Amino acid sequence: MKKLKGIGVSPGITIGPAYLVPKLHQYVSDHRLPPEKTVSEIQRLEKALAETEEELKKIRAQTAQNSGAIEADIFNVHLLLLHDRELKKEIIRQIKEGANAAWSAQTVIHRHLERLGKVNDAYLNERRYDLEDVGKRLLRNLLGIKGYLADLKEKVVLVAHNLTPSETASLNRKLVSAFATDVGGPTSHTAIMARALEIPAVVGLKEITEVTRPGEMLIVDGQQGVVIVDPEESVLKEYTQRRIDLRKNHRALSPLKDIIACTRDKHRVIIGANIELPVEVSSVLAYGADEIGLFRTEFLYLNREDLPSEEEQFRVYRHVVEKVKPCPVTIRTLDLGGDKFASALNMPEEMNPFLGWRAIRFCLSQPDIFKAQLRAILRAGAFGPVRIMYPLISDVEEIKAARAIMEEAMAELKQENKKFIPSIPVGAMIEVPSAALTAGAISRYVDFFSIGTNDLIQYSMAVDRTNVRTAHLYNPAHPAILRLISEVIRAGRKAGIPVGLCGEMAANPALAFLLIGMGIGELSMAPLAIPEVKQMTLLITLTEARECAQKIAAMDSTLEINALLKKKYAEIMKREKKR
Ligand code: PEP
Ligand code: MG
Image (cartoon, rainbow, N blue to C red; front, side):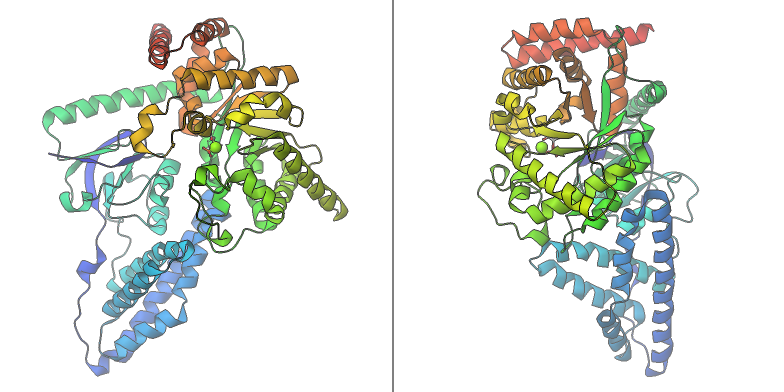
């Protein structure tokens, strides 16, 4: 038995045999060809190129149908790479020098990959993965290795060094029960795909492909980020039981999809979903969210060398809006900077990027980029209910400036006779202490507040949200955070505008109970977290949540607050067992 620790990127537990994605280089050798074979070898290459093209077009069409045109776009990049003249010329030159086609393709692609890896440009670096992906597909065709998962008879855990977009897009979901990879992070493509497919996944395991033999039993725990190879009997038993409990819980929660979150004393709580990619819309619908409470739009600007046009953005927003209609969609304007940078923008390196040229600060100083996004959102609003939300507001003047640019955008659209929503609700994200403390002033210029606790906590407590060493200090139940949240709720009430919360805190049912008691009306979270929060809401009364919140407001120990919440939540869950 061997236990490996990686990063859990998609929750759930799977137990099953390993399927090792073949390492193609093991099949390629440098056997030389006599000159009379050159012509037929070049024909073999042409045939493999044509087959690869056909496959890519097929996957592009399938992906467009299943996930949308934006997700399918990656395969256009692959087709472009496949048609790269230089690449083909180099491969043919090597064949003419006596190398076989597979060896030539492998060495030429490898050389290009090395070159791309050395370039100091995030966009070109990223293209490495695409070239690697296309290269593998071409090699498979040259070697005659067809449909590498085609021979499967039972469900397997896919073990790979890394899974490429086309590998994940073309795999048969019915036959793959989990992913385990050597490399990757929480936002890697494999992670996103696993979450979209809703199968457990652990990435960044470093040596999973080295320590696993084909067919060996694996336990994948996507919650804890653990993979156990060849488990002992007792461990297998423990995980089998845990998997049964999880499934039972999942089954018990699934009818909640169609039930609105209402406390026993008839207080309605709006449950929203946070999404980072349009593909997640299917999860929004599957988990029965009332709305998309936070649509992060950074993905449109990352991993590319140009900026998205207004038209491209409009198409994406409209697609999401139409898919979830009549549920409203809250689109957050660009939140670049901090830990997200776009290569097209040449953003300078800063000493403190989280305190620097970020989010609304960046947008207000780049009005053309900002206006293109606002125009796209306003136009999408003509196709379903949309709200706009500005990130990282720290001063009321920023709201006024953003409003002025939005009004310009509206005037332009009107003059151009373009369809748009003239009365779009506008909100401020409250994620900086200065905004929380001046929420009253800001409330005069907005239609709603959404508290972003992920940032509010890091800025209030001076704790970098991405630093593992200080993670123990990052505490949502700290009295200072609760007081700031209360301040925003009070200002919102006074102004008569709704106050929601879209930080990770909303996804924790015990904290969500406290937030409801404090007066938060909308909780927005990752789609997977929705069932548990809904379940809690159905089991409580607003009166008890309020009483608990009042008690906690008078407490000043984070430890004691957490202990009380834990006890209270356990008590709430006991009611479920009695039902
Ligand atoms: C937040 O800060 O709480 C938030 C929801 O925004 P993000 O996590 O994208 O910074
Ligand atoms: Mg934030």
